[in-house]
Image (cartoon, rainbow, N blue to C red):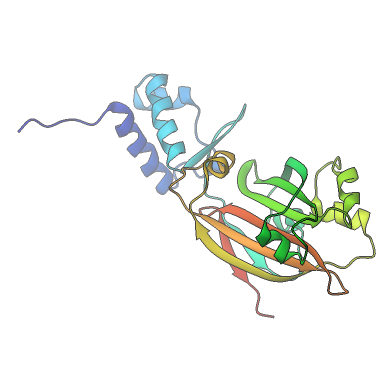
Length: 240
């Protein structure tokens, strides 16, 4: 029986993957350049590019434009607590956080979102779509919803740099104390939009966290849902 050999780029993919698993490239979590790979394995850059593309499709690496390819081995503990700031928690872990505002709209809420915020479906809400990064790796897409009338000041303060929803709320409503009252976690396959933002395959599950927050008077403030890379986030529960 004739043996069918694997394409050269698949063989290279397997070799690079083995080196990643054996932590050969663990220094700074950055892979060598295409030129270095080509010289190391005696192949052309097109073959290297095909192998790296396959590694990227499988979620083993990600690309930062103008900087190169990095190993997707960041593990961020998602701490369940009543109060939290994404940026501060990430910095406390020794990583570099960044949040990008993808869109801000005033919309009619779905029946489910209106119910979560205790609103009538005819009442408009603010919808903020955010992309959160850790060390330039996009790890989560989040959606936040607020009553568009009571929290209208948010819209006028979205140009804050660096962007922080936590700081915007503190600026607009300095006397308000926001507390998370519930968080529900589940696993889902991402939509094409979510997988594109997170640079991951659509058949790889994401961790969905749905959170409801109230103020010190027991009034609903925010309903939010975040879609996080399951390979970059782990759940941490503090039972204190």
